[in-house]
Length: 150
Image (cartoon, rainbow, N blue to C red):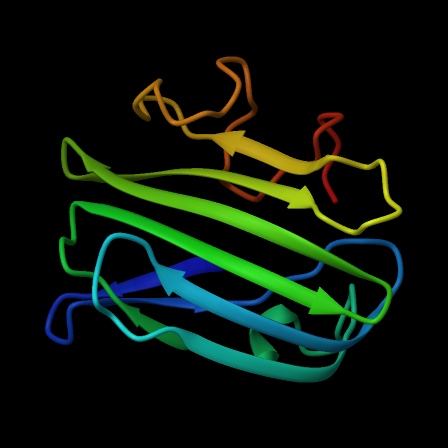
Protein backbone atom coordinates (compact mmCIF):
# COMPACT_ATOMS: atom_id res chain seq x y z
CA UNK A 1 0.00 0.00 0.00
CA UNK A 2 1.53 3.32 -1.04
CA UNK A 3 0.33 6.85 -0.31
CA UNK A 4 -0.16 9.13 -3.29
CA UNK A 5 -1.63 12.44 -2.17
CA UNK A 6 -3.04 14.16 0.93
CA UNK A 7 -6.44 15.84 0.49
CA UNK A 8 -6.65 18.67 3.08
CA UNK A 9 -10.34 19.34 2.44
CA UNK A 10 -11.54 15.75 2.89
CA UNK A 11 -8.77 15.11 5.47
CA UNK A 12 -7.59 11.83 4.05
CA UNK A 13 -4.71 10.21 2.24
CA UNK A 14 -5.19 8.47 -1.08
CA UNK A 15 -3.43 5.13 -1.40
CA UNK A 16 -3.05 2.42 -4.01
CA UNK A 17 -2.04 -1.24 -3.86
CA UNK A 18 1.26 -2.00 -5.53
CA UNK A 19 2.85 -5.40 -6.05
CA UNK A 20 6.53 -5.58 -6.88
CA UNK A 21 7.23 -9.33 -6.75
CA UNK A 22 8.32 -11.23 -9.86
CA UNK A 23 4.98 -12.99 -10.52
CA UNK A 24 1.32 -11.98 -10.35
CA UNK A 25 -0.72 -12.94 -7.31
CA UNK A 26 -4.34 -14.08 -7.51
CA UNK A 27 -7.51 -13.77 -5.44
CA UNK A 28 -6.13 -10.88 -3.42
CA UNK A 29 -8.08 -9.57 -0.44
CA UNK A 30 -6.84 -6.57 1.52
CA UNK A 31 -8.03 -4.90 4.70
CA UNK A 32 -6.58 -1.43 5.22
CA UNK A 33 -6.90 0.22 8.63
CA UNK A 34 -6.07 3.47 10.38
CA UNK A 35 -4.53 2.38 13.69
CA UNK A 36 -5.65 4.19 16.85
CA UNK A 37 -8.82 5.69 15.39
CA UNK A 38 -12.46 4.92 14.77
CA UNK A 39 -12.11 5.25 11.00
CA UNK A 40 -13.78 2.27 9.28
CA UNK A 41 -11.53 -0.26 7.55
CA UNK A 42 -11.37 -0.34 3.76
CA UNK A 43 -11.80 -3.80 2.20
CA UNK A 44 -10.50 -4.42 -1.31
CA UNK A 45 -10.60 -7.45 -3.60
CA UNK A 46 -8.72 -8.13 -6.82
CA UNK A 47 -8.81 -11.23 -9.03
CA UNK A 48 -5.21 -10.60 -10.03
CA UNK A 49 -2.51 -8.16 -9.02
CA UNK A 50 0.22 -8.12 -11.64
CA UNK A 51 3.75 -7.04 -10.81
CA UNK A 52 3.86 -4.91 -13.97
CA UNK A 53 0.34 -3.90 -15.05
CA UNK A 54 0.18 -2.34 -18.49
CA UNK A 55 -1.24 0.95 -17.20
CA UNK A 56 0.84 1.07 -14.02
CA UNK A 57 -0.14 0.09 -10.46
CA UNK A 58 -2.37 3.12 -9.98
CA UNK A 59 -4.64 1.71 -12.73
CA UNK A 60 -6.10 -0.50 -9.98
CA UNK A 61 -7.53 2.66 -8.52
CA UNK A 62 -6.78 4.88 -5.59
CA UNK A 63 -8.75 4.62 -2.39
CA UNK A 64 -9.02 7.10 0.49
CA UNK A 65 -8.33 6.47 4.17
CA UNK A 66 -9.29 9.21 6.59
CA UNK A 67 -6.54 10.68 8.73
CA UNK A 68 -7.64 12.00 12.12
CA UNK A 69 -4.31 13.88 12.35
CA UNK A 70 -2.69 14.97 9.07
CA UNK A 71 0.72 15.26 10.75
CA UNK A 72 0.80 11.69 12.08
CA UNK A 73 -0.66 8.59 10.44
CA UNK A 74 -0.31 4.92 11.30
CA UNK A 75 -1.82 2.54 8.77
CA UNK A 76 -1.88 -1.23 8.57
CA UNK A 77 -2.78 -3.40 5.60
CA UNK A 78 -3.33 -7.15 5.77
CA UNK A 79 -3.17 -9.01 2.47
CA UNK A 80 -4.37 -12.54 1.77
CA UNK A 81 -3.82 -14.07 -1.65
CA UNK A 82 -3.71 -17.49 -3.26
CA UNK A 83 -0.61 -18.99 -1.70
CA UNK A 84 0.18 -16.55 1.08
CA UNK A 85 -0.39 -13.63 3.40
CA UNK A 86 1.49 -10.43 4.18
CA UNK A 87 1.11 -7.50 6.58
CA UNK A 88 2.30 -3.93 6.07
CA UNK A 89 2.83 -1.24 8.67
CA UNK A 90 2.95 2.20 7.09
CA UNK A 91 3.68 5.34 9.07
CA UNK A 92 3.42 8.89 7.74
CA UNK A 93 4.85 11.87 9.61
CA UNK A 94 4.86 15.52 8.62
CA UNK A 95 8.22 16.88 9.79
CA UNK A 96 9.10 20.48 9.10
CA UNK A 97 6.36 20.70 6.46
CA UNK A 98 7.73 17.67 4.60
CA UNK A 99 6.06 14.26 4.37
CA UNK A 100 8.25 11.41 5.62
CA UNK A 101 7.38 7.72 5.51
CA UNK A 102 8.42 4.49 7.17
CA UNK A 103 7.16 1.09 6.04
CA UNK A 104 7.69 -2.59 6.77
CA UNK A 105 6.09 -5.48 4.87
CA UNK A 106 6.33 -8.93 6.42
CA UNK A 107 5.49 -12.26 4.78
CA UNK A 108 3.12 -14.05 7.18
CA UNK A 109 2.58 -17.14 5.02
CA UNK A 110 2.59 -20.28 7.20
CA UNK A 111 5.22 -22.18 5.20
CA UNK A 112 7.38 -19.22 4.21
CA UNK A 113 10.68 -18.19 5.70
CA UNK A 114 10.95 -14.92 3.77
CA UNK A 115 10.30 -12.71 6.81
CA UNK A 116 10.71 -9.03 5.99
CA UNK A 117 9.92 -8.36 2.33
CA UNK A 118 10.40 -4.60 2.46
CA UNK A 119 11.69 -2.14 5.03
CA UNK A 120 12.31 1.55 4.44
CA UNK A 121 12.43 4.80 6.36
CA UNK A 122 12.84 8.33 5.02
CA UNK A 123 15.60 10.54 6.38
CA UNK A 124 14.41 12.48 9.41
CA UNK A 125 11.72 9.96 10.36
CA UNK A 126 11.51 9.31 14.14
CA UNK A 127 13.89 6.53 15.11
CA UNK A 128 11.63 4.55 17.47
CA UNK A 129 9.24 2.92 14.97
CA UNK A 130 10.63 -0.63 14.89
CA UNK A 131 12.43 -0.23 11.57
CA UNK A 132 16.18 -0.70 11.22
CA UNK A 133 18.23 2.46 11.69
CA UNK A 134 20.05 1.92 8.39
CA UNK A 135 16.93 1.06 6.35
CA UNK A 136 16.93 2.65 2.88
CA UNK A 137 14.81 5.70 2.12
CA UNK A 138 11.22 5.02 1.03
CA UNK A 139 11.26 7.63 -1.72
CA UNK A 140 11.51 7.96 -4.67
CA UNK A 141 10.25 4.38 -4.53
CA UNK A 142 9.99 1.58 -2.05
CA UNK A 143 13.20 -0.44 -2.04
CA UNK A 144 13.73 -4.18 -1.52
CA UNK A 145 15.45 -5.40 1.63
CA UNK A 146 18.63 -6.24 -0.28
CA UNK A 147 18.82 -2.64 -1.51
CA UNK A 148 17.71 -3.37 -5.07
CA UNK A 149 14.64 -1.81 -6.60
CA UNK A 150 11.73 -4.22 -6.85
